[in-house]
Length: 298
Image 1: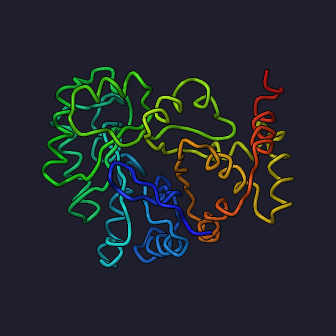
Image 2: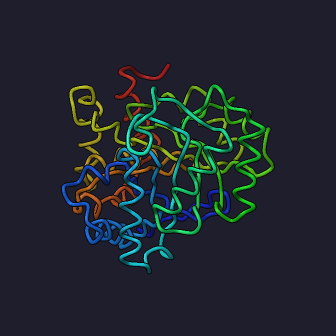
Image 3: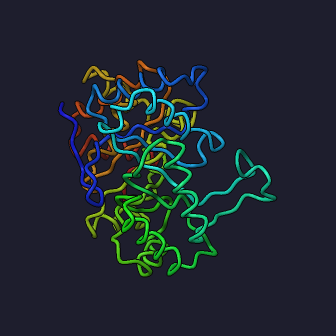
Protein backbone atom coordinates (compact mmCIF):
# COMPACT_ATOMS: atom_id res chain seq x y z
CA UNK A 1 0.00 0.00 0.00
CA UNK A 2 1.19 3.54 -0.71
CA UNK A 3 2.37 5.46 2.34
CA UNK A 4 -0.11 8.16 3.33
CA UNK A 5 1.12 11.73 3.82
CA UNK A 6 -0.21 13.89 6.64
CA UNK A 7 0.08 17.67 6.85
CA UNK A 8 1.48 18.57 10.27
CA UNK A 9 1.61 22.33 10.67
CA UNK A 10 2.27 22.74 6.97
CA UNK A 11 4.94 20.04 6.93
CA UNK A 12 4.05 16.96 4.89
CA UNK A 13 5.03 13.92 6.95
CA UNK A 14 4.84 10.18 6.32
CA UNK A 15 2.02 8.43 8.19
CA UNK A 16 4.56 6.15 9.85
CA UNK A 17 7.55 7.85 11.47
CA UNK A 18 10.95 6.33 12.16
CA UNK A 19 12.01 6.96 15.76
CA UNK A 20 15.73 7.38 16.38
CA UNK A 21 15.82 7.25 20.18
CA UNK A 22 17.75 3.95 20.07
CA UNK A 23 20.20 4.99 17.38
CA UNK A 24 23.12 5.05 19.81
CA UNK A 25 22.26 1.62 21.25
CA UNK A 26 23.22 -0.16 18.04
CA UNK A 27 26.56 -1.95 17.95
CA UNK A 28 27.17 -0.22 14.63
CA UNK A 29 26.71 3.55 14.70
CA UNK A 30 28.80 4.27 11.59
CA UNK A 31 27.32 6.82 9.15
CA UNK A 32 26.89 4.16 6.46
CA UNK A 33 24.81 1.98 8.80
CA UNK A 34 22.63 4.90 9.88
CA UNK A 35 22.19 5.73 6.20
CA UNK A 36 21.14 2.13 5.53
CA UNK A 37 18.35 2.50 8.11
CA UNK A 38 17.14 5.71 6.50
CA UNK A 39 17.27 4.15 3.04
CA UNK A 40 15.25 1.17 4.32
CA UNK A 41 12.63 3.64 5.53
CA UNK A 42 12.63 5.61 2.28
CA UNK A 43 12.09 2.44 0.27
CA UNK A 44 8.68 2.18 1.98
CA UNK A 45 7.79 5.85 1.80
CA UNK A 46 8.75 6.52 5.42
CA UNK A 47 10.36 9.95 5.14
CA UNK A 48 9.95 11.39 8.65
CA UNK A 49 12.72 10.89 11.21
CA UNK A 50 12.02 11.54 14.90
CA UNK A 51 14.85 12.80 17.11
CA UNK A 52 15.33 14.63 20.43
CA UNK A 53 18.32 16.40 21.88
CA UNK A 54 18.35 14.03 24.88
CA UNK A 55 18.26 10.80 22.87
CA UNK A 56 21.30 8.60 23.41
CA UNK A 57 22.53 10.82 26.23
CA UNK A 58 22.54 13.82 23.87
CA UNK A 59 24.42 11.84 21.21
CA UNK A 60 21.77 10.60 18.74
CA UNK A 61 21.43 13.85 16.81
CA UNK A 62 25.16 13.81 16.04
CA UNK A 63 24.86 10.25 14.69
CA UNK A 64 22.18 11.41 12.28
CA UNK A 65 24.28 14.43 11.40
CA UNK A 66 27.28 12.27 10.54
CA UNK A 67 25.12 10.21 8.18
CA UNK A 68 23.71 13.32 6.50
CA UNK A 69 27.19 14.77 6.12
CA UNK A 70 28.41 11.56 4.49
CA UNK A 71 25.38 11.43 2.16
CA UNK A 72 24.19 15.05 1.69
CA UNK A 73 21.43 14.06 -0.74
CA UNK A 74 19.51 12.40 2.09
CA UNK A 75 18.51 15.67 3.73
CA UNK A 76 16.20 16.71 0.90
CA UNK A 77 14.41 13.35 1.04
CA UNK A 78 13.43 13.42 4.72
CA UNK A 79 11.65 15.50 7.33
CA UNK A 80 13.38 15.90 10.68
CA UNK A 81 11.53 16.16 13.98
CA UNK A 82 13.42 16.94 17.17
CA UNK A 83 12.60 17.95 20.73
CA UNK A 84 14.07 19.99 23.56
CA UNK A 85 13.61 21.11 27.19
CA UNK A 86 14.75 18.02 29.14
CA UNK A 87 18.02 18.60 31.00
CA UNK A 88 19.46 15.42 32.49
CA UNK A 89 22.88 14.77 34.08
CA UNK A 90 24.40 13.25 30.92
CA UNK A 91 26.42 14.28 27.90
CA UNK A 92 26.75 18.03 27.56
CA UNK A 93 24.61 18.49 30.69
CA UNK A 94 26.66 16.08 32.83
CA UNK A 95 27.16 18.78 35.47
CA UNK A 96 23.42 19.20 36.14
CA UNK A 97 22.64 18.51 39.80
CA UNK A 98 19.16 17.19 39.02
CA UNK A 99 17.06 16.25 36.03
CA UNK A 100 14.76 19.13 35.15
CA UNK A 101 12.84 20.88 32.35
CA UNK A 102 13.85 24.20 30.87
CA UNK A 103 11.49 26.05 28.54
CA UNK A 104 13.21 29.41 28.95
CA UNK A 105 13.84 31.29 25.71
CA UNK A 106 17.60 31.09 26.29
CA UNK A 107 17.57 27.32 26.69
CA UNK A 108 15.18 26.59 23.82
CA UNK A 109 17.12 28.84 21.44
CA UNK A 110 20.46 27.34 22.45
CA UNK A 111 19.06 23.83 22.10
CA UNK A 112 17.78 24.55 18.60
CA UNK A 113 21.13 25.97 17.52
CA UNK A 114 22.90 22.92 18.92
CA UNK A 115 20.49 20.54 17.17
CA UNK A 116 21.04 22.31 13.87
CA UNK A 117 24.80 22.05 14.31
CA UNK A 118 24.83 18.40 15.41
CA UNK A 119 22.49 17.24 12.66
CA UNK A 120 24.36 19.23 10.00
CA UNK A 121 21.15 20.95 8.84
CA UNK A 122 20.00 24.54 8.49
CA UNK A 123 16.34 24.01 9.43
CA UNK A 124 14.31 21.73 11.68
CA UNK A 125 11.04 20.63 10.08
CA UNK A 126 9.18 20.15 13.37
CA UNK A 127 10.32 21.19 16.85
CA UNK A 128 8.51 19.78 19.87
CA UNK A 129 8.68 20.90 23.48
CA UNK A 130 9.47 17.50 24.98
CA UNK A 131 7.75 17.65 28.38
CA UNK A 132 5.36 20.05 30.13
CA UNK A 133 7.42 22.39 32.31
CA UNK A 134 5.74 23.37 35.60
CA UNK A 135 7.90 26.50 35.61
CA UNK A 136 7.06 27.50 32.04
CA UNK A 137 6.50 31.18 31.34
CA UNK A 138 4.13 30.55 28.45
CA UNK A 139 4.53 34.05 27.02
CA UNK A 140 8.32 33.81 26.99
CA UNK A 141 8.33 30.29 25.55
CA UNK A 142 5.63 31.09 23.02
CA UNK A 143 7.42 34.22 21.86
CA UNK A 144 10.65 32.22 21.47
CA UNK A 145 8.92 29.58 19.34
CA UNK A 146 7.34 32.28 17.18
CA UNK A 147 10.77 33.86 16.71
CA UNK A 148 12.35 30.54 15.71
CA UNK A 149 9.70 30.06 13.03
CA UNK A 150 10.09 33.64 11.82
CA UNK A 151 13.89 33.20 11.64
CA UNK A 152 13.48 30.11 9.45
CA UNK A 153 15.26 27.83 11.90
CA UNK A 154 12.07 25.82 12.46
CA UNK A 155 9.22 25.17 10.03
CA UNK A 156 6.59 24.08 12.55
CA UNK A 157 6.31 23.67 16.31
CA UNK A 158 4.38 21.36 18.60
CA UNK A 159 4.53 19.57 21.91
CA UNK A 160 5.16 16.16 23.39
CA UNK A 161 3.45 14.63 26.44
CA UNK A 162 1.27 17.72 26.93
CA UNK A 163 -2.22 17.48 28.38
CA UNK A 164 -4.94 19.70 26.88
CA UNK A 165 -4.49 22.39 29.56
CA UNK A 166 -0.71 22.49 29.00
CA UNK A 167 -1.33 22.86 25.26
CA UNK A 168 -3.85 25.67 25.76
CA UNK A 169 -1.48 27.55 28.06
CA UNK A 170 1.42 27.47 25.60
CA UNK A 171 -0.80 28.28 22.61
CA UNK A 172 -2.14 31.32 24.46
CA UNK A 173 1.37 32.79 24.45
CA UNK A 174 2.11 32.44 20.75
CA UNK A 175 0.75 33.35 17.33
CA UNK A 176 2.07 30.29 15.46
CA UNK A 177 -0.48 27.45 15.66
CA UNK A 178 0.87 24.41 17.49
CA UNK A 179 0.93 21.55 15.00
CA UNK A 180 0.85 18.27 16.92
CA UNK A 181 1.24 16.58 20.28
CA UNK A 182 3.37 13.44 20.55
CA UNK A 183 1.98 11.26 23.35
CA UNK A 184 2.24 7.67 24.47
CA UNK A 185 -0.41 5.54 22.77
CA UNK A 186 -0.69 1.82 22.14
CA UNK A 187 -3.07 -1.07 22.53
CA UNK A 188 -1.87 -1.40 26.13
CA UNK A 189 -1.68 2.35 26.79
CA UNK A 190 -5.14 3.25 25.54
CA UNK A 191 -6.21 5.80 28.18
CA UNK A 192 -5.76 8.75 25.75
CA UNK A 193 -8.74 7.47 23.77
CA UNK A 194 -11.07 8.05 26.72
CA UNK A 195 -9.36 10.61 29.01
CA UNK A 196 -9.85 13.53 26.63
CA UNK A 197 -6.37 13.68 25.09
CA UNK A 198 -7.30 12.28 21.69
CA UNK A 199 -10.71 13.99 21.65
CA UNK A 200 -9.13 17.39 22.35
CA UNK A 201 -6.85 17.25 19.32
CA UNK A 202 -9.28 15.41 17.07
CA UNK A 203 -11.86 18.16 17.61
CA UNK A 204 -9.31 20.77 16.53
CA UNK A 205 -8.10 18.76 13.54
CA UNK A 206 -4.55 18.33 14.84
CA UNK A 207 -2.92 15.00 13.98
CA UNK A 208 -1.31 13.19 16.88
CA UNK A 209 2.01 11.38 17.03
CA UNK A 210 2.20 8.18 19.07
CA UNK A 211 5.37 7.19 20.87
CA UNK A 212 5.90 3.62 22.09
CA UNK A 213 3.12 2.27 19.82
CA UNK A 214 4.14 -1.30 20.73
CA UNK A 215 4.06 -0.51 24.46
CA UNK A 216 7.82 -0.73 24.77
CA UNK A 217 7.70 -4.43 23.92
CA UNK A 218 5.21 -5.20 26.71
CA UNK A 219 2.79 -6.56 24.09
CA UNK A 220 5.09 -9.53 23.76
CA UNK A 221 5.44 -10.21 27.47
CA UNK A 222 3.07 -11.58 30.10
CA UNK A 223 1.15 -8.30 30.39
CA UNK A 224 0.16 -8.45 26.75
CA UNK A 225 -0.73 -12.14 26.49
CA UNK A 226 -4.49 -11.77 26.06
CA UNK A 227 -4.15 -8.93 23.57
CA UNK A 228 -1.40 -10.74 21.71
CA UNK A 229 -3.65 -13.74 21.16
CA UNK A 230 -6.16 -11.55 19.30
CA UNK A 231 -3.44 -9.72 17.39
CA UNK A 232 -1.83 -12.99 16.31
CA UNK A 233 -5.11 -14.45 15.10
CA UNK A 234 -5.79 -11.41 12.92
CA UNK A 235 -2.16 -11.30 11.81
CA UNK A 236 -2.16 -14.94 10.74
CA UNK A 237 -5.29 -14.43 8.67
CA UNK A 238 -3.66 -11.49 6.85
CA UNK A 239 -0.13 -12.90 6.64
CA UNK A 240 1.55 -10.16 8.65
CA UNK A 241 3.28 -9.94 12.02
CA UNK A 242 1.29 -9.26 15.18
CA UNK A 243 3.04 -5.93 15.72
CA UNK A 244 1.75 -4.74 12.33
CA UNK A 245 -1.80 -5.32 13.59
CA UNK A 246 -1.05 -3.39 16.79
CA UNK A 247 0.13 -0.43 14.73
CA UNK A 248 -2.84 -0.76 12.36
CA UNK A 249 -5.11 -0.48 15.42
CA UNK A 250 -3.74 3.04 15.93
CA UNK A 251 -3.87 3.90 12.23
CA UNK A 252 -7.53 2.86 12.08
CA UNK A 253 -8.58 5.68 14.43
CA UNK A 254 -10.01 8.79 12.73
CA UNK A 255 -7.74 11.14 14.74
CA UNK A 256 -4.98 10.65 12.11
CA UNK A 257 -2.36 9.16 14.42
CA UNK A 258 1.26 8.92 13.26
CA UNK A 259 2.98 6.01 15.06
CA UNK A 260 6.67 6.58 15.82
CA UNK A 261 8.43 3.25 15.31
CA UNK A 262 11.88 2.65 16.77
CA UNK A 263 14.13 -0.30 15.96
CA UNK A 264 17.75 -0.78 14.90
CA UNK A 265 17.10 -4.06 13.09
CA UNK A 266 17.18 -3.53 9.33
CA UNK A 267 14.78 -6.42 8.68
CA UNK A 268 12.26 -4.99 11.12
CA UNK A 269 12.69 -1.51 9.66
CA UNK A 270 11.92 -2.97 6.23
CA UNK A 271 8.60 -4.29 7.56
CA UNK A 272 7.36 -1.15 9.31
CA UNK A 273 4.95 -0.33 6.50
CA UNK A 274 3.23 -3.74 6.75
CA UNK A 275 0.75 -2.10 9.11
CA UNK A 276 -0.68 -0.21 6.15
CA UNK A 277 -1.79 -3.49 4.56
CA UNK A 278 -3.79 -4.63 7.60
CA UNK A 279 -7.56 -4.36 7.24
CA UNK A 280 -9.58 -3.92 10.42
CA UNK A 281 -13.31 -3.45 10.73
CA UNK A 282 -15.06 -1.92 13.76
CA UNK A 283 -15.53 -5.29 15.46
CA UNK A 284 -11.85 -6.17 14.99
CA UNK A 285 -10.89 -2.85 16.58
CA UNK A 286 -13.19 -3.41 19.54
CA UNK A 287 -12.12 -7.03 19.95
CA UNK A 288 -8.53 -5.85 20.39
CA UNK A 289 -9.69 -3.06 22.70
CA UNK A 290 -11.77 -5.47 24.76
CA UNK A 291 -8.77 -7.77 25.22
CA UNK A 292 -6.71 -4.78 26.36
CA UNK A 293 -9.40 -3.66 28.82
CA UNK A 294 -9.80 -7.17 30.20
CA UNK A 295 -13.59 -6.90 30.01
CA UNK A 296 -16.25 -5.97 27.49
CA UNK A 297 -17.22 -2.35 27.06
CA UNK A 298 -20.15 -1.15 29.18
